[in-house]
Length: 75
Image (cartoon, rainbow, N blue to C red; front, side, top):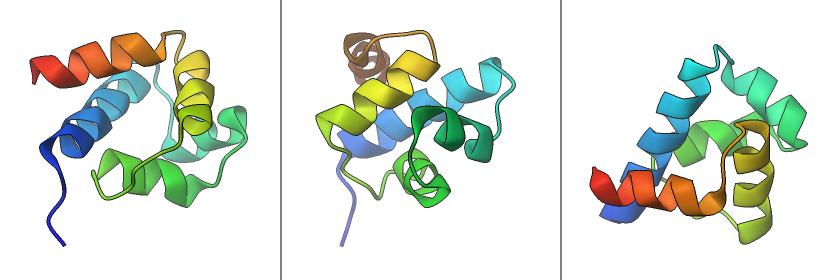
């Protein structure tokens, strides 16, 4: 199944922000209280996260869900 562009762009935005914080996928997942596979699948654009997962990730990246979507929309 092809992925939606918004999911690919959102994943790229999360990856860029995670790397800017020098965090591994494992570190981000642990801090956000989610499984490492969730972060990996999200970053590859093959996972449609819930609002709560996005909120947990955004919080640990010191940003907002809105900013993640704005960044994804600019891609």
